[in-house]
Length: 159
Image (cartoon, rainbow, N blue to C red; front, side, top):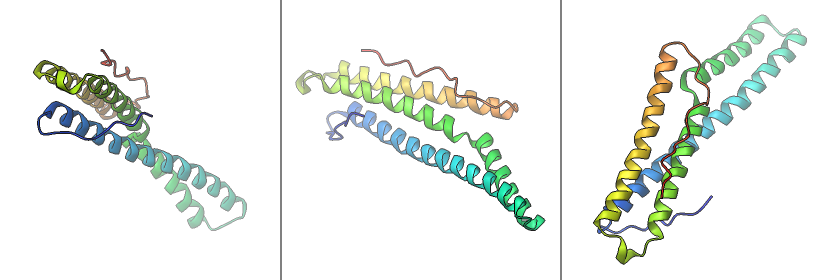
């Protein structure tokens, strides 16, 4: 992953805005990745533990409690979709990174109002597309559908 300089000046509000959005999507993606991976590992562990404690003839309360934790975590995945959130945030972050890198390749003295406006509009469009995908995901969840990660890629990565 490329390292994007985060130095901004008050005279370049478009770059400042883009970098704030980039930082937000990095944090959001990291948090979603953590919840996804922690949830998946915990589901694996509690599923295996349920089988083991049942085989060891543990009490019904212990076996049922471990199975209930597994069930809860499975429901958590369905309701909150941390994997879909992670994928969507990652796609958005990369699209914003590309826009910022292209903008930073322009010499600072050539970053006029038109270039700043173009960067701002591109970042706004990228974020709007991500918000639209999030809304579609929420509507599917409300309708009882289980959304899968078949969202269209954030395709606003234009020069």
